[in-house]
Structure formats: C-alpha cells, structure tokens
Image (cartoon, rainbow, N blue to C red; front, side, top):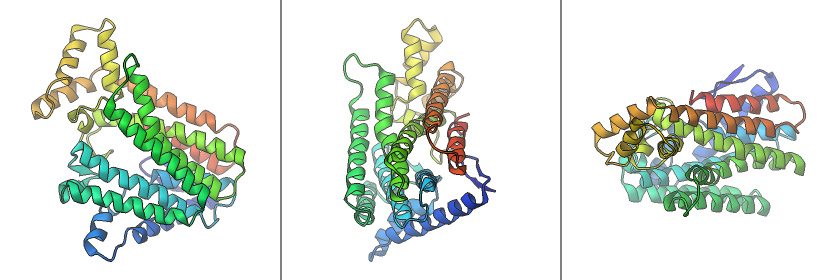
Length: 336
C-alpha cells in the first residue's frame, strides 16, 4: 500500500500503486534531466528546489487522471514534468515577490543567492518546460498558454486588489482560481488528454482539478496561520508579514465590519500595522490562531474540497477515482 505524503493518500489497488510509484519516479528523473545545464551554476540553482522535494501534487494528479485511458501513453510523464516545472518556476518568482527566506524547508533561491538569480532561474525553468511541452503537440501548447495567462492574471489581480465594490472574499477566490486552480486543472487535463481519454472525461477531470486546486490553496491560507512551518515548508505567517490578506484575515475583517467585538476590531488594527516587527507579527499570529475566522476559513476549504469530490461523479468506477476522492480529504486534512 502506497502512502503519498503529505496527503495521507492510501493507494490500496496494487496495479495503481505500481503505476503511481513508477510514474512519480519517472517524473523525478524527468525533472532532474530537464533542469540540467551546460553551466554548472545554472544546474545548481535550477535543481535547488527540485532536490528539496515537495508534494509533487500536480504530477500525482496527472498520473491519476491518466488512469481512465492509457496510463502508459508516452506523453503522460512529460506532461507531468511540464506542470511541475511550471509550478517550480512560479515558486522562484513568488519568493522574490514575497521576500521569502525559506521554501520547502531550505533557504529560498533569493536568500541562497539573490533576487536576480532567483528570477532568472525561474525564467530558465519556464524555458525548459516549454521545450518539453513542444514535443506534446500544438493542443498541449495552447492549453498551457491559456493556463499560464490565467496564472499571471491571478497574480496581477492579487497585486491590484479588489475592484471598487467587489467583495474581498470573492476577489480572493478569483485570485486563487487563477494562481493555483488553473495549473492544477491543467495537470488533470493533461493526464486525461495524453492518455487518450474522451472529451467528456477530459472535461470532468479538468473541473475536478480546478476545484481541488482552489481547496488546496485555501488550505494553504489556513496553514500560513496555523502551521508551525513543518507542514508547509515555509516560515509561518509569511503571507501575514507581507501584508497578503488570506482567507482567515478576510473573514476577520468581514466579522469586524459587520458588528464584531472590540477584540475583533483591535486585531484588525494590529494586522493593518507593521508586521515586519517580530513582536507584532507574533501577536497577530496568536490572535488569528485563537479567532473563529480561522475555523471559517477551514470550513471554506472543506466546502471547496467537497465540490471537487462531487465533480468526480460522472467518472466510471475505478481505483483512481477512489484515489482522487481521497485527495479531497487529504488536501484539507493538512489544514485541520
């Protein structure tokens, strides 16, 4: 029985277990090969986060989605490599934007070297992803381009903030659908498409990916507040320190604005202050961890995971369907 960490996914079917293990090992080899350069320093920087490990959530979804047709089709593993390379590239850029010091339990690339190296390494990984992608055909290139546009749009929306009159939580969900849901939807879509699944199955799995992607990121919102850092591989409260309003903060603001207590308003004022100060940051984290807003955010993550589970209903009975359903629990369990 394979347990895919950190989601606690028990793969109980022996054939599926073998396919998942072999597929993830092939993806890992593909990642190492794709991040090699003739310049040793580029190889070191490009493989920095690959070697740090990570969830490999997107490749896992690609491999599971391929199970509904031919999981051994030649494009499945390269497609999984593409989505993970793209994800890794965004992490290098995110760490520069967030001025993060830690990623996946190791120093971030910008902390290890500098911002310029981190940005350029991210660009190198995008280039390598495009190189692998080119062999998968024009349809795959188009799908990836559309997803990348959505990803960047989500990042811009986050930077710009809600438009006038827009509900802040609605805006946040739009941001997450673009920044995270788009690429996770592609991971599922590529798995189904490359394996030769029919259009209906491709559509179902893409919808599942979009929904579980949003649930995944909402769980990360909770983890940024609730985690001790071991689970997320990042310093707790990183988003908080950078002034990024994640779901618990948005729920707190909504509660305070709609007749909340004096303590609610006091915590909002604390969050609006300078959280680069370690003592204020610690107080803000402690306040949010004890506040009902954190539980509201957890419930939202669970609700989106249940939407993902419901999206699987049209799929035929299959051990991979059971595994995808189990991931709905595993994703939000991290935030429990």
